[in-house]
Image (spheres, rainbow, N blue to C red):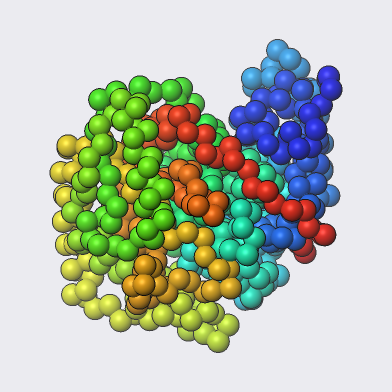
Length: 489
């Protein structure tokens, strides 16, 4: 092995670069891990992204990875798994065997699961080195990451502001160069909004592409597991490890993992792109956010695509999202709210109450609305290839707030209303991502939401990769000052 890269160089590397260097013995898994732990020690006390850390267990895994590299030899390096030796923390809502997994709830403060969720099992099988857990809002409810167990996660680009949520710890860890990829999940924007806030990529896949398992409902479609990274190629790499059918009956369509190993390069000439600033619903979006995003539309035209303002008819999307979300909250959290209401935050109790209040007629109306919405989306994608929209309605906000209550002076009735830019797309079921798309005048990240038709997950990554290559916004790292301790327990 020659001269190894510095810790700073390792921290800046992509997952593709890291795994390639480990596979070819330019870098050891232990060196990659030590660089991650060094960065956690330097910056985590400022942003509180990583909340559980197991350096001894991680060193054992990294040592085993290096032994496997040596045993494989140069001729068999390609036989090593896709994430071989890559250190990463996992979202604290994903059960991780033998490691405290709290859901951000005092009820699970000391819970240590005896089995991995499917996405974690697949990451481990692909060679990832588990190092700890990243912070989440309580039970992943809401797009701002704070809880009574670990406190608030803040933004690496402005540590007094929100990192978004619910995959806020994951996004902050990526933005702060703690790790190259993260696992996350998204019901109403939990991958896309923190990605927008932290200048990374958050990808919400098609239903069934990355199975959410275990689940109390095989047919559940609103919540998705998915990847986050600083680069689109790393999203594709992670999907080669976590995509594919779930065990047991396959009731949602899957995408073969090898789909994401294809080349990302694509000519956008002739692509028909629609842009909507307000989703055709008058959804309020901060004027600075719109200014940044509208300045990017010309990039797609330079790449050969046509862009015009248009949007599918999303008038049924709010009803579908809110009612399906409320029912899923009853399904997953109803018993806990019944038995431990005083230990659960008011936004969750409200959502469960909304679900319990739904009548049979409400559920029938929701099914009819979802059908109308699906037909309108199908009609729209008969004329357009891609929909562009704001990923988040606001810039990163004061981390001391529970959620924004106004946008452009307009009052927001509930804690979900500032997330509608993501929620209405969730209701369509379409694959969507947030892509780094520039910065406000104060240097705050802004994400562009990209949406394509059902099952076109890989094609969506190709479009995002073309925009990434033309702009390079994700390469702008935060000037995060080193803190004075690891800030984890």
